[in-house]
Length: 164
Image 1 (cartoon, one colour):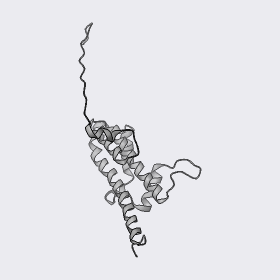
Image 2: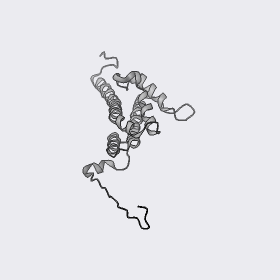
Image 3: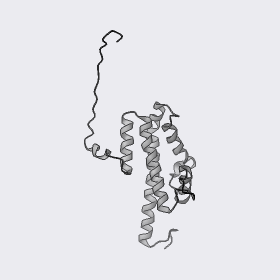
Image 4: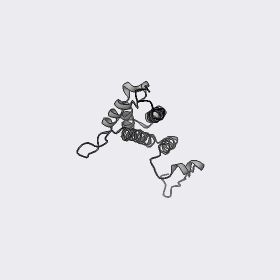
């Protein structure tokens, strides 16, 4: 290694993604695409990279819900509102945070952010990935269920309070 002409060996690694490669095209606001990207980054032990996609999924889910119920994502002066404030307002109105962790619901974004900004080591972040992913998917499922239930109530001619 320290000689005049050191010898270096390179190892080339290629993973064939097959059908999944079509799902990993340019980012297109597709929620499943974000989860696929998170999973792929996790497979390569890229903790912060995998969590970035989870946080993006969580933010997009929350902003989509906000738009659906008329919660402004900008302030009166046209500046972006903080995500924490948007999340709090959306959750107060339609309860998107799963009941199982509602008391710590805003902690999810903090956990995701801490990993992304380097406040957690890689091993700890990788260990938390599956739990964080499940919570992010849980929020998304709650938003989807709330929208489907509202549509069903409307189709049945029921008021939002459940009485017909």
